[in-house]
Image 1: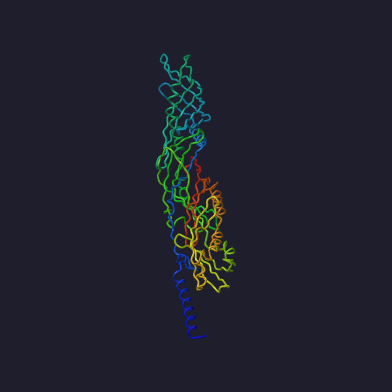
Image 2: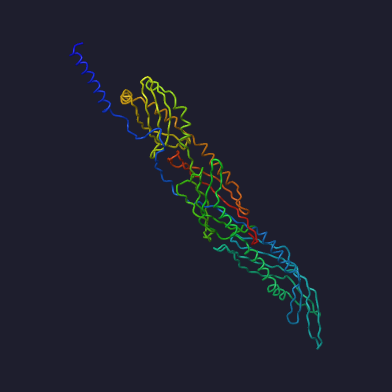
Length: 489
């Protein structure tokens, strides 16, 4: 080969090399995503959670009026065991009152009506001077009487119950005969009972009503609300409650029960696996039971934001068997390995290693996609992946930047496989909460009943460890508080 021919061939070869270098430098590449795989979790941008919505736990304290009735009957019988002796001028008497069964009924406005029948027996002695001679005549007395009492109890802001009463008595007939003269002692006996019996009866009933210890019972519930309600041990699922205020309506009655309707305003948050619903907990330090705020009506219901988290490791495990294997990309056999997921900003970053033996090429494929949740199918997935390729193979770089490139099919495969069903997790959370609040004892004197009416997923956001989906649970919680007429706690 002549020297001239060698120079021409060399120039042509050099030109081809220069053209390839220019193509390598100037041809458009996929967007530079500045991600690395494998890599530690990158900083994520947390989306703000919805502000907490106060919840109201309904509580109802019921006192059976029958309890007050039995105590009042027993106390009244003890008081009337001895006859009531009385003297007024010429008339001296001793009367034994035997109370019958009390009728005690509540009204819608909280007042209590009491009706007490009495059988009375005894004697009356009349002393008179007739023609200068002192004459005494003693006669037995028997008859019936009915006493009525109206009790108006009031619940005060400091939890004390006070009560006002009004009462009266009606004696049907009470007469004695002295020297052939019939004398009515009904008025005398009426005054006697009004002065010596009714005040005691009022005191007895008021004592039992005002001794009702509502505050101790509600304070016990208030303190118990600070204790986490554990729904599950592993993974740990617990409700944390901060009680804020107590609302109440005036006393009411359905006829047989004296009732107090309460509403405890709270913040409720759910912690799962030690993860709070927010970085800053809304539950503050314990506070003592506050005074009551009275309202005309009460509405109850709870709002809980509970986080469901799917770790990057769990998603990788689900997708690896479909991604880490041999693929045909534009007819080129490509081996994919080392799928790695992590958060990057507000997007999900994915990286895989690949090799193409036929081209002698190796490299990394990096992708960024947007995580989404489909409420209808309850599936988490990633859409709209953008990707970038890093490789030392010039031929692969050129091939990737010509036409549609080599990797779109692999990107599509990865998108299809990065799907995670959340229905089981959401259903499990709902069932556990439902079971926990359906019928629950809180101390000796309180029972909680609740329902889970709706569960609504909120927007997805990323953490250092995975994808978090906050769900809003809504329902109702009611507490039954057992009362009695004893001051003992």
